[in-house]
Amino acid sequence: MKILFAISECVPFAKSGGLADVAGALPKELVRQGIDIRVIMPKYGSIENNLKARMEKKTEYTVEVGWRNQYCGIEELEFQGVSYYFVDNEYYFMREDLYGYFDDGERFAFFNKAVLDSLPHIHFQPDIIHCHDWHTGMIPFLLKMEYKEKEGYQSIQTVFTIHNLLFQGIMPRDSLKELFGLQEKYDHVDYLEFYGCISYLKGAIIAADKITTVSPTYKNEIQTSVYGEKLHELLQSRSNDLEGILNGIDLELYNPERDPFLLKNYSEKDVTNKRVNKLHLQELLGLPIKEKTPLIAMITRLTKQKGIDLVRHVFRELIAEDIQLIILGTGDHEYEHFFQQMEAAYPHKCKAYIEFDEGLAHKVYAGADLFLMPSQFEPCGLGQMIAMRYGAVPIVRETGGLNDTVLSFNEQSGEGNGFTFSQYNAHDMLFTIERALSFYRDEACWRNIVQNAMAMDYSWAQSAIKYKQLYSELVSRSEIHVYK
Ligand code: ADP
Image 1 (spheres, rainbow, N blue to C red):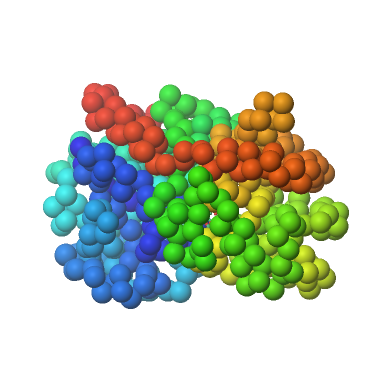
Image 2 (cartoon, protein in one colour; image 1 turned 90 degrees about the horizontal axis):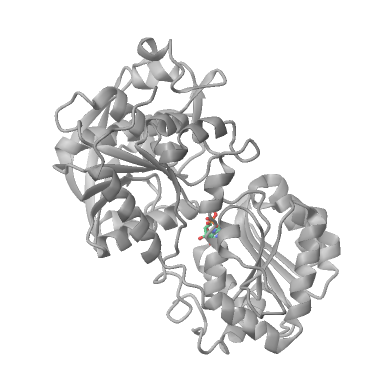
């Protein structure tokens, strides 16, 4: 079985969030399970020079982006057993950030067409192209509507994974003509139409042969009007082809036993060195060095989705507790400023690092006692799983993947790997944090909760088996999904 994995970011080359973690880990696991899977992504300017230096140019061709003819180079790199193709065009990708530019619609229109056009040039004939999020949303659509008559494309099927339904790639309607040269052909139908614009993500939902999302609970949630981002009815209409497969985490990358970022390594069997990391973290960040004070951490994009409003709403009540709080994150300026102000107001209790810092993130996971993730919605969430692996007990809202991975501690049975609350309500969150703190004070009880959290198996092996089954099902089924 041959799979081409088309994605906009991938660890260790480029990362803005969990999407890159998935791309860095799942293909590796699928290769281990015998699948010929290759990853294709943009060659960004921000990729480290030592990785760029190892890439080899394989081929070049031109790609039509509306009326433009754009250069496209393909560079290749074998990394940890996986083959990567990098789509090279300096004008589109040699920029400081991955996204957030006025012409993102054009940049990813180029990428989508470059992926489809690459096949005869890279001499790889996939059975399935597995696409992810809006950045690759037009691939299933273009494949089904435009490439199906072309030699070599007829039998290719597509899987589309929704990592976050909020981001849809909504572009002006004339992008169809400007970027794809397709306006006349599709003007009379509503395939891509989205409230007067077009949506790349909608294109994928109507055209992909299978759709997956990254947790079973999120799969159900996105078919409701509350979480469906105005696409719930369309998703309901595809429910037979919609599956929720929980993400895993890369156990090599996130391994407290061997993590090079930690001052002292530790394991589930012997967590004594976790406290060394806690004290080191307090010292590093300029917090009072207090072993017994519970250290709560958040490592997150600072956006509405992540429940930052709840923290802001009860911040003064929360900080009045005997706690220390570390925020590592970047995002909306109002949240960044808020945490900077709180650090200034409570310098002995609160530290806000408004940066994206992978090394510091590992140190914080290792040093923290509790990991707060009160998301408004959470497709899967990796933070809580990484935190558990490092023995930082998660406090989460019961939504999406948080609901599928965190089981609230039950003092009667001793079961549970964290603390949860259900309503999107700041005082429910505060109450849950206080409940967690009350158990923290009981050392034996806390040791048990930490053990429960560290014992969880969130490796990719199980999820990869599910993707493999999905691929096999798709390749063996005779009828092809047709959008009516
Ligand atoms: P999302 O993909 O929605 O941002 P996830 O929980 O799925 O959220 O994944 C977030 C990933 O990004 C985790 O690996 C987390 O450790 C990492 N991360 C988030 N913010 C930062 C930051 N400021 N510095 C370092 N790593 C971060």
